[in-house]
Image 1 (cartoon, helix red, strand yellow):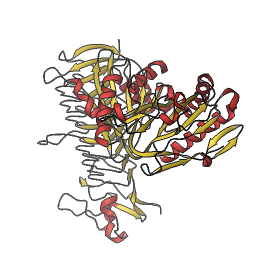
Image 2: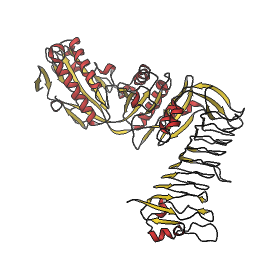
Image 3: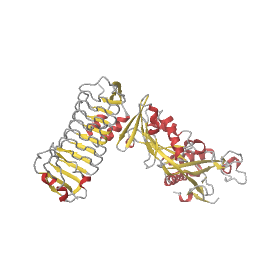
Image 4: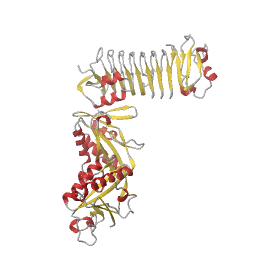
Length: 302
Length: 270
């Protein structure tokens, strides 16, 4: 693999290959920021990959009290799925089980688009006839009586068809500790980029996958070319100094937000340097034939 | 282009129908055509030019200088633009309005905003009986838009309200929010006897209590509701005093239990 050397770190001359997705956004508020985060965290649970979870879900950022409709602290959550129907199902189930249930929560649209998904319009039935609709200007809210008062939920939220899933950077380091330090630096930087999430645990995936498997019925399997315990294999992508590999996967509401997130992640890892962080940075692709969005690392360098 | 200004020459000798004098109906008309618009409802002819001195301008914004409680149906079925009247109006101001802004500097008569569907009606003075209410035989009253009355309103304000928001900064007469279907009535002052009489659904805020509360409303205790913050934020551009009033705890009364009992009255906590 050809590479550039930036701040002592090898950057592969390759690209991340990403796919079009459907996405929506929500604002979740609560009496305190920790409780808003709790609702958002529960809702994001088991939302790492559409392969097995139905949706990829994550926290975009915290919302201050003056950014939310009800003047309470909140959190912005993004949801990604492969179809509008699946996104609707995931949204309804996740908000119904994780936000409606969370103490003091309220839930608002985080995206304004012509086409909409049902939010309160689907959850209102929990009110068993005691739910109340309020139209205020061009917004419509449902008030559902619950045991700590009322769950306020906007009737609908927007949906975008131009979201992008699967932007990524692959971090390769001399040890598990330094590679994880590089990943943590990237995650912290990408958290500051609006309209993008990292759906894997803590933003990091250690089991990157390739398409296909030797076994029937498995659509994906371990990315053996990047497994350090197999690096003696002829088709390994790893150099002899690499002992650990971690991947940051990024979903964004727009192609630009994914590019900005990758850029921020790259800059943070490069700034950390090879001693404390990664020795080499790569990106995952499928030869460029599957996904329409190609993010070349050399174009995203700081 | 400046506004079309109509200046009253003298008080009219009969009740008049102002329904033809809206921005949407006057659009594209010349000064002579506007002056020839009939307003009379008796056999005695009364045209705009007979009653008013015209200063031609954009009919999208109409200013009427002078008013009378004989001016009925001002802004009736108005669909857009602005209409401002610097005095009193008669019955049915803003009836069936669908858009635009109607401003009345004086008092409005009965059935203001009757059957209104959209837009904004602002009354600087008082409004008469059945604000937003239906005429006899109609199933529903106001069904959209915002009404702001800075003074008081008469009996049966928001009668059969179906959707939309009515804000009365002062007092309201008896049976405020009677037979409400849905929607919101916010009263800053004290309400007369029996607010929410036979209301099915909807929200009625009695900012300073009422003269007699029906026993068919069930006390649900005092609450701090997120919905009140949303309502206060929505009301803020129309009335800062009501918005401030809404931002505290309220006693929620469920009723009217004489009917389906899914409406609510918000009452001062004590």
